[in-house]
Image (cartoon, rainbow, N blue to C red; front, side, top):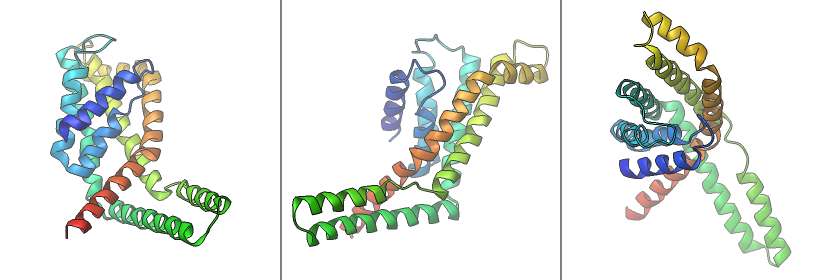
Length: 218
């Protein structure tokens, strides 16, 4: 799974290269750790920067900064693995799986009961609208976790950019925070959106597929 998530992250990174600090990479690392454990998440985080840190149109990162970037990316893996162990996340996911399964069954049932092209279109449109409703508490939880992890990542990497260029760690922290504000705002805002809108449906879909496979093999 590490090569799979690494490839997805690198592909989307290069596709979105013209948008600074707006990437799906962090979300993929989080999902990898949430679904498959901390080792997969950490392996994905390190593997991404082992490639992206050297093969980058904006230039190659020095080894010191690369260390901080890898460490910061591992925060997303840690957040995903820890959140997966909480009862709150498990209950929210279980609720969403039940909701999606029930909606799918209602679509099939409605299609069986109603006849005619217009009736079928109306049934499908109604259920699609129901499926499009927001994830609510789950989106809020994952969005906040993503925002906090991104804030920690930005603080760490901005500090690492200046730690050996100033006379003290305190100066490195302050200068890094001030000079990195524009990029940090883009990074944190975009990750808040991605973690609230992309991550929950992806995790619920993966859990549903895994549950269906498990039921079929029993």
